[in-house]
Structure formats: C-alpha cells, structure tokens
Amino acid sequence: MIAADGPAGSNTRLLSVDAGGTVRHRHRGDLAALFRPGDLVVANEAATLPASLAGTHEPTGARIEVRLAAIWRLCPYRAQPGLPDTDQGPETQNDRSFPNSVTFCGQPGGVSDVVQTPPSLRRRMRRRILPALGRIGVRSKLVVTRYDLGLPGFERNQRPLRIAGLADLHACDPWMPVVRIADIVARVNSLQPDLIVLLGDYVNAISEWDHGWVPMGDWAAALANLDAPLGVFAVLGNHDWREDGDAATAALEDNGIHVLDNDVRRLTFGDGQPFWLAGLADQRVVDLGWGRFDGDDDLPGTLERIDDEAPVILLAHEPDIFPSVPPRVALTLCGHTHGGQCRFPLVGPVVVPSRYWRRYAYGHVVEDDRHMIVSGGLGCSGLPIRFGVPSEIVLVEVSGQSPTEGPG
Image (cartoon, rainbow, N blue to C red; front, side, top):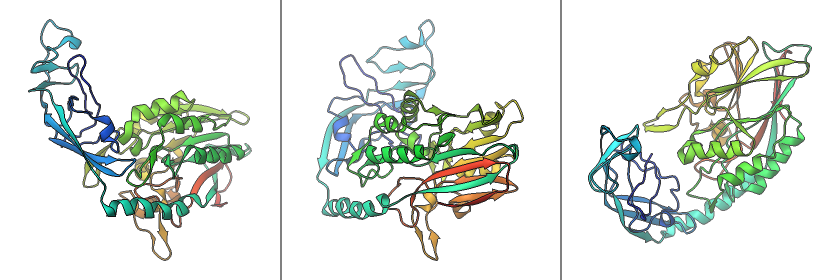
C-alpha cells in the first residue's frame, strides 16, 4: 500500500505499490483527476517510488503521465524512545516514522507535473469497435444452471437445500450496469433459494474497454435486494483486492451481505438440518509475477472454527484450493475462471486462469468423492466478450439422494 502524508494544507493521494516498485493505483484509469502539481506521494512497500506513474484517463482514453518531483525511500522502522507512535518524527523533516511500519528517509515525494497525451487512432478505434461486438456476446443470454447433488451429512428424508450462486459480476458501464445487476437479482429471487452465495469479483475487470466505473456503493446496493431465508453470504475475489478489498467488504456489509473471510457460519434449514457455511479469503491477493500469487486464504484455520459434525459447504473464489480441501467438506463452490469466457467448438476454452487449466475450468468436478461446482460467472475480464459461455446463475439443490445434474 502507499501511504500519503505531508505538511498541513498539502494534497495527498493513496496508491498501491508492490515490493518490486510496480504501481497498482486504485483508480488506475483517472490519474489526471487524482493528481495535481504539489501533491505528496509516499510508498511504504516499495524500496523506491518510480519517477513517474502512467495510466489511462477513462472518459477519453488519453494516456496520463504523472511526474514526481522526488521520492521517498524506505529505512527499517526505528522507534524513538519516549514518544508515542503517532508522534514519531517531525512532519516535514527527513525522519518520519509510522506505527508498526517503517521509517521514511529522504525528502518527501511530490508531483511536479501531470502530462496528458491524446489517445492514438488505434486506441480510439479499439475502444469503439470491440465494445460494440462485446455488447452482443455479454448481454444476449442469462441462463440458470441447475445441479441436484446427493451429499454426505445431509438427511435423505429432508427437503433439498436450495442454494443460488453468483460469481464474477464485474460491474461496469455499459457491460454490467446497475440496471442489469437489478435484473439478475430479480431472476435469482424468483428461484426462491434458501441461501444465496456470492463468489467474488464484483468490480470492473475490463477497464481498457469500458466507458464508466460503477461505484462500489451502487453495485452493492443493487445486490442488497437479494432475498433468501438463510441470508446472503459472500467472499471476495482477486479483482476486488486489486481495487480495494477493504472497501468492497464494507460496501457489502453495509448492504446486509455477510462477508466470510476465513470465517464460518452455522445455519439450519428445513426441520432442523444443520450445516456449516465456510468462506475462504482470496488466494490471489498479491500478484508476484510469473503465475505466482500470494493470498490471505487459511483453509486449516477456517475449518478449525467448526465445532461439530454437521456437513460443510465451502465458498472460495478460485477453484485451485480444491486439491487441499478435505473430505470433511461436502461441497465447494467457486467462480473466477468464467468457464474460460470463450469456448470454441472442438477446441474448448483456450484461456483458463488456473494453474490446473481445464481441470477446474467449469462445472461439476468430483475427485475422491469430493464435490466442487465452478460457476461460469456473469461478467467479463480482460475483454468484454463471452462466446460459448453464457452468463449464468448457479442453482444447487443439496439432499441425501443420488446426484443428477444438467443445465436449465
């Protein structure tokens, strides 16, 4: 994370910079609106902050370069005896300390200039033609994919537990605007589920092509209309953390949606059938490069919170956790892959964001008598196009009977 701080009266901005110095600013598309000459910028994860930041101004497609007058560099944190953490160091001098963090040495970094370059012809054409094609693929069809599963721990003479699942909303305008989210919510409610689960990635993931971001409060307010007797529960996805995981959590919680972050909840349905709903923190919070990620997930710690023998249903954004899921978990529900997003005849999906590739691309997976369902999701990532993978609502009916499955 970047912390921004400066003398009284100065402008400050919050960004994100990884340990290698790569800038991951939260509002990456609107740097011109974020920065003005004189702003201070301070990094607390990167050894140095780059001399300039680059991004795209979303409304126009123009390239933006923010040139920094100076940078902070990191030194190990050292407390000064006799001073509370909040008072460590003078505000404008070279030795400014922050609690439980690091000491910033050197002169404060500041923005010296903001340069805006008009978009190239290629970029302007790309922003007009591809979204027009994408509109057809993204908004043409919404399906309900149904699964009837017989799982251990659920009583045979109990009515089925009906779970509706939504994954990879990726709210953005015009591809997944609030009005479309409202339509999806209405369709889910019409299915009369006992429980609704949200499997992560609520924020925009096609920023290069869209024309507007949907504020977190807006998409969360639309999801607040989801209605189920046992409640609405959610986990976060990797794109939510790239944007602002804490803000996404707050938006969901403020709208009555419970976020399970390495946490569990014991629920009861029907004539008293108990089960546990467990939610795993995201496995791809930090991109380390070369297909490597660092996550906040703690599967053993999460399952340790369960204190009886009732069956467990696990929510996890990415399906890659499945080989580590013990038989104690009756069902794992995931998203993330979009089913490949584009599936071609005779070829299938070409791009699947999983280290197991097509093994966990989509659908009902059974390994060693353990069950997982991977949703094809609703929105898009990278490009605003779906082909052969319609946006879907997953509806799972869980009982003690023999399983059958099929789209509907």
